[in-house]
Image (tube, rainbow, N blue to C red; front, side):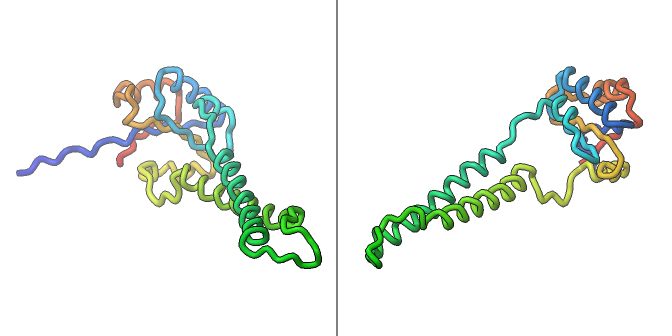
Length: 181
């Protein structure tokens, strides 16, 4: 007879009553040395983000760089077309008439920046994500309505199921759930 192993744990999920309780719990979890944590709230909650020490965001840099590339591409395309490839002197105007290049340069700057912002945000957020282990917890459905949740992943170096569960329970959550993959 084949012995089946118990499924490994994704982590633990604690539900709290309010954003303040979640913020305090997140600070305590971070101060205890856990780093693979995530918080889920129905609205943006800046104190929770500060408690998790999440400060760096790559999206603005991606948008800036791609906007510069888009503007440079638009300007270079027009310069190449009117000065190098097809230099016709019509009406005694100069080949390099940069004020005429501004509208297309601006539009390509906005186009590249907007598309890179959306695509960068989706990729960096790991979206679309049709499945996540937290979806297995029935109460997690309320995370987008009125629930405040804190997840500690089992891949965290400090994670020990019994110790971590005991620690989370000491933070006075409504309930602590085991999250199976």
